[in-house]
Amino acid sequence: MNRVRSLAAALSSLLLVSTLAACGSDGDDAPANVSAKTASLGTLEPGVIKVAVQPYAPYTSVKDDKIVGLDGDILAYVAKKLDLRIKPQVTDFAGMLAGVQSRRVDITIGGVAWSADRQKQGLFTDPPYYSPPAMAVRSGKTYKTVDDLKGLQLGTVEGYVWVKSIQAVPGAKLHAYPDANGVFDDLGAGRVDVGFLDPLIIIAAQKERPDLKISTEYLTPPTAAEVKAKPAYQYFQPYQTGFYLPRKATKLEKAISEQIDAMYKNGEMAKLVKKYGGDPEQFLKPAADVASARRGVDRPQDWTPPSIGQ
Image 1 (cartoon, rainbow, N blue to C red):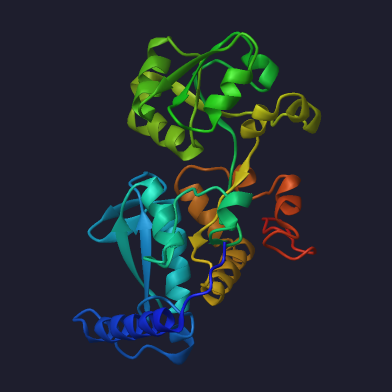
Image 2 (tube, rainbow, N blue to C red):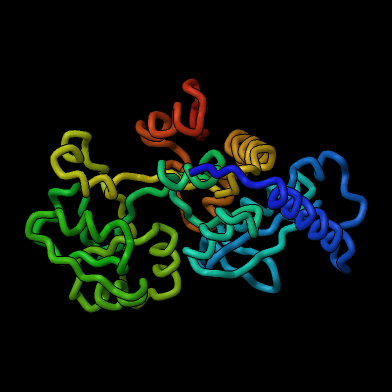
């Protein structure tokens, strides 16, 4: 709810902003020779983009004060184009969202799913990639549809959206774990048939733990009729990710989205997805409902989601 502030409160806020700006410009690591174009992006510190991330390899990790991983590489490419220096702040997922919504940081990255509720409290860029419904399975096993999952032992991490989906599968038994390692351990031991995790997590585990003998499969998304009959099945569909910014950061969001769209066209996005073992055909082509979800919400009615092969 919007509230009208008193004149005194408004003046106090303006004074605080002026003081913070002055302090930021005098620091030892303040950028020199920031162009007017870069300064106009409106970051908290001119020439610097403050980024909240959680350790979530291979999407985001911080090493030597640098964000690495798929999302980190995408942002690094964008920041270079916009002449911005990246300054990471490590937190947890809740802290990432809170940091943006309170404008303590300029942006957060790392597989953040777009949702109608989240966009009310922040701005989402165009999707840097779309996260397909991935399954970790024992090598030699094949599961393609939701019907194939009936009666199976299905694992995921506590609190992940797939908990609700798994609970809706007839005859399936949910195994929820504190982290992905628990899913992989029980999958390798045969106590779980399928593990639902973000795809690059599974791909990385295949390389790092070959003894598990697991492979990555992608679930054929349930139909609209299936989701209507069982709404929890919506989490078995691909979701669009986005970089998440404060509500007032309109210029920065627009500039980043333009660079993201350009990366689809010039092949850079496909190159980075492949670098981390992902399939561009799975990660960089939107599902049919991506456009309709955002049109008239936080995008114009004629908005077209970025996609390879356009």
